[in-house]
Every structure is written in structure tokens, then in C-alpha cells.
Length: 260
Ligand code: SAH
Image (cartoon, helix red, strand yellow):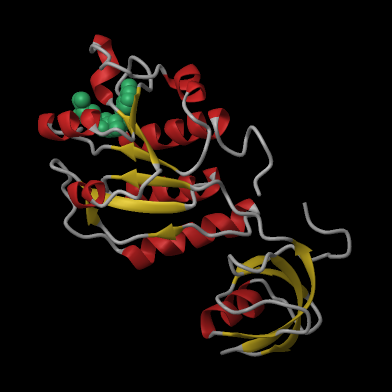
């Protein structure tokens, strides 16, 4: 869905202001990608976005081995923010964690927050690497917004400091395989639709080991938490993340209405 006046096919995230006539200097990696790998030369068009100023058509003004300069011509798309939805997930194995971040960016999460739960193995995450995955996903899916990947935070600390008014879709594996639904629990889509559609929201997905009994008890007692079932089978955390994002987007998100 490129603008009509452009032959540019490459989309590149840059961390600089974009606007008519704006000069955008390229770093070594960007220059290598555009001129070394993609073989662009002076005059070629590139689509740029920075997560703030929408998407812009820019032209190569200078192409070098270690750098270069692009000049912005015209905006091709305005900034389109996703709904105010956070994805909280407990980091799992590297490849699956990367998958969750990539899918969350594609599915339109506004913020991605790795949380340390009682049964989370990871003590550390590579925030910079995960952020780079979110950028790549935005480049690829035509997004003009890049979700921020936060640093790892303890779930209990996050819940203790929970922002007022933000709903929490608690994906509770306790439902699976005939587990009794806690009082007030939603059976997914219809249940979510009955809740207030007002943003902001967050989705919580547990680790491979699931939530501890103490965590689950605490989560079920939180006034802003809505326990939700993802069906009778126990899903892997990465599957659960995509399923929950789908459910939320279909019930309350920008699948039902255009994003602001
Ligand atoms: N080892 C755990 C399962 C963890 S699955 C057990 O055997 O109980 C990882 C996470 O995915 C869960 O913590 C939950 O947040 C989510 N999840 C997986 N299947 C689910 C389901 N059927 N309903 C709701 N959430 C689910």
C-alpha cells in the first residue's frame, strides 16, 4: 500500500525527525543496507518512519560506503497509533521470546513489557535486541509506530504500581482442561465484549511453568483484572500471546474500528 507518487519499496526506521526538506544522515549499517545490499544509488526513493512523524518518501542525496544522506520529500502516510494495549509476558527461550515480540509488534501492541514471575527462568533479557525485533516487525508490516520494549520488571512490582484505569486481561491457564472458572471470569470473546471497551488495557501471559498458586490468587483478586480462557487446551506461551492479541483486537481493538 505505497503512496501513488512513489516507486520506493524499502521501508526503513530512522531515529531522526522527519518533515518536508528534512535531511536524514545515515549510519554505517543503514548505508551498508541501502547501498551495499539493496544497491540503491543517488535519486532512489526510500520510505522512512520514526514512530512519531508518519511515513515519508525520501530520496538518496549522497550514497557512500560508511554513510550517506537522504532528503525527505513528502509524507506518504500519517502516524497511526495502535490502541493503548500493553502485552505483559514472562520471557521464555530466546527464539520464542523473539517470536512474541515480533508478533506483538505486528498485532498492534503499543508497549511490550517482559515480566519476571515466580516461575520465570530468565533473570535478564537483551532489551536492545528485543527492541530491534520490534523495529524490524514494524518495517515489514507497514507500521508507522514502533512499540517500546520495556526492561524486565517483576510482576508483583508492576501490579503494586498499576496505573489507574488500565484493565488487565489475565490469561489464566487454570481454565484449561476442565479447570473451574473463577467467579466473574469471561469466556473469551463474548466476555471481553461485555467489559468496558474503553482503553487502556493490558494482556498478561505466563511462562512455560504457568503462574504460581499465590500469583494466581492475587491476580484473581485484583479489581482491574479480567480472567480469560483461551480454550480447553494448554497453549505454549508464544501461541497464547498471539491468540490473546487476536482476541483482544477482534473484541475491543482496531480490528473493530479504525485506529486513531
Ligand atoms: N505449565 C502451565 C501452562 C503454561 S502455558 C500448566 O501446565 O498449567 C503459558 C501461559 O499461556 C499461561 O500462563 C497462560 O497465561 C497462557 N495460556 C496457555 N493456555 C491457556 C488457556 N487455555 N487459557 C488461558 N491462558 C492460557
